[in-house]
Length: 196
Length: 214
Image 1 (cartoon, rainbow over the protein chains, first blue to last red):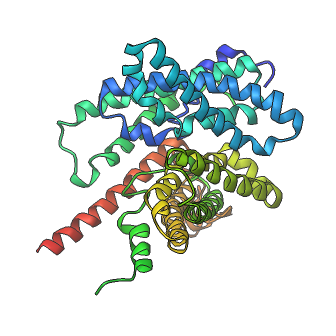
Image 2 (cartoon, rainbow over the protein chains, first blue to last red):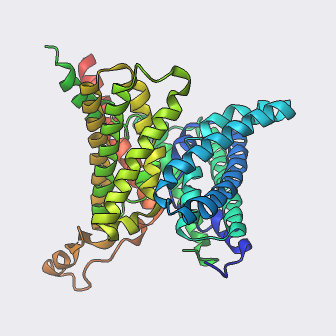
Image 3 (cartoon, chains in turn purple, cyan):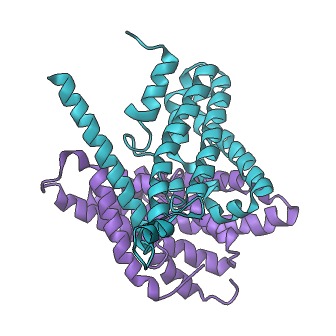
């Protein structure tokens, strides 16, 4: 993965390899928090923020601490602790310095620790052996990709509320079908760049 | 006639409040591997193992763990079991371990496990918690196995890597053989299959409720 430009990775993570629509990561909060446009946008921002920070931190921890010591097999435990700790720190930091940001973003932060997308990005970055810059680009790109997906989903769900849907398909059922159609639309990008 | 608690758990976890179709939990880590039946089977086994033993551990420790840090403790217990699964897979089935990639590690963030710990294991005896973990794991796996069965059969025309659809098509006189539904292998296939499954099961629930009301 040496020569790949960070820009390519960034766009690939948004469009061709969308973390949600091609890798199914972050589904739980995607389905449960996509009922309103505003909250979806807030959560999307928070995820992007945390993804960028944890991708960078986990990269440093893995390549400077775990790899030299031969402790790769501990990466799951270490990554999840790093993620939980940075979410906690971030929450305290935002609370201290920006009240308005805390009100908009703060409530979503605890939810993010268990968002699979965060751990997923860190694991992908290790398996694909990205460099530091590549990892950060991949993290930001994945976050924005997730943000786009959840905002689009929330927009569609807000409108679909008033429509007639078969009773058994209401709620998560119809949301999954919409995701399927969105995933199909995103396959249309797949000729642009190819990673992995 | 009242069922014993153990029997009730089976009914709840396998169908009535199935983690996937009813609670829509934890599909992140596994839906992605449902395009190949064997991978799904391995993931399902791994997940069931992790859920059952984490539930047992948490239940044994439930009176010792302070309330405030219980989430962290739960996560650490779960991660430790996932590490065991990961290392075993690497040692015994390296090819599958490679094709599963990061998804084994993602069992940690699977909401089902966390959900069972919170809802059941932290307030029940170790024996029952283990049983509940086991049944939740199986309840989760069987649905994904059905989805994987359809996706692999239509997508590759195979079952467990054995070509099935091709000879079948030839035998009924279609000379081109099986045309693979590459759509099924890709992500949208997974979304649509799960949606269909939820649709059918909700429909069955509705029929049953209607029968009871009548």
